[in-house]
Amino acid sequence: MNFLNVGQGDSILIQTPSDKIILIDGGPGTSVLTELNDVLPFLEKDIDLMVLTHPHSDHIEGLVAVLKRYNVDAALITGVSYTNSYYEEFLKDLPLEADVYFASAEHDFDFGDGVFLDVLYPFDEISGKEFDNLNNSSIVIRLIYGDTAILLTGDAEIEVEEMLLSEGVLLSSDILKAGHHGSRTASSTAFVQAVSPGIVVIECGSDNSFGHPHDEAMTIFEEIGADVYRTDLDGRVTMVF
Image 1: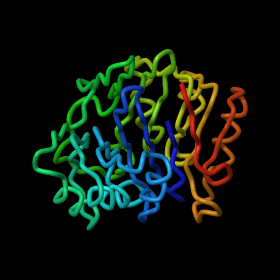
Image 2 (image 1 turned 30 degrees about the vertical axis):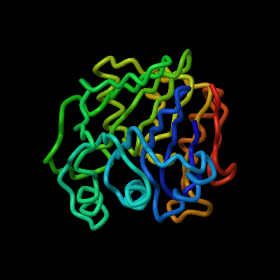
Image 3 (image 1 turned 180 degrees about the vertical axis):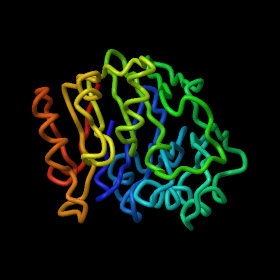
Image 4 (image 1 turned 90 degrees about the vertical axis):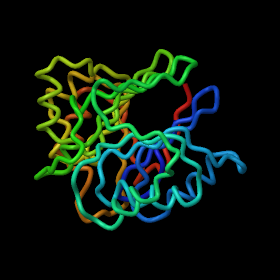
């Protein structure tokens, strides 16, 4: 599993024991292509599942570039109503033969070898809906990889975290990808305590203009004793299970 170094954005690559390839978000720009070239075998040009957590440019722009270079068998998206050129191009470039799933908590994917991808949020399909805060349309995923659980929250903020807590959703995970690049608008104390991760990964760019990760989030991670890895300081973060 690789938390790719794509600057101020998210991109996560998962390779299963049977060589299924899952790509979650693509970051800004096209640096994801360099990262994929470094991580994947030279002739590997098939992505079994592409996930777009939400269509902000720092998550979708790289996926547009990937669609032009790789074969995509299936895509998991929200289908929210939002206008930007990258989102329009992404939807246009999705292969006609690809299976497209609109995210809801009913969608669970079994990749074999003990690898499961469970959608925790949105609870119901939100295709066609508009959001005042697009971050809170983000797909939240709990990935099971053998005996290890990884919680991937996109840019979901405290509002979504509170909904997950109030619904009693199983959040406990060994690894947490910090929401919204380690912003103070995510990673509430109650949420992080419920997840209780031993490791937190923050995807953010060096000297980014947002000041991510924020001190408030870092303090919470430190208080629970988690080891923190950051793509701005550590580069690509690779984990093998």
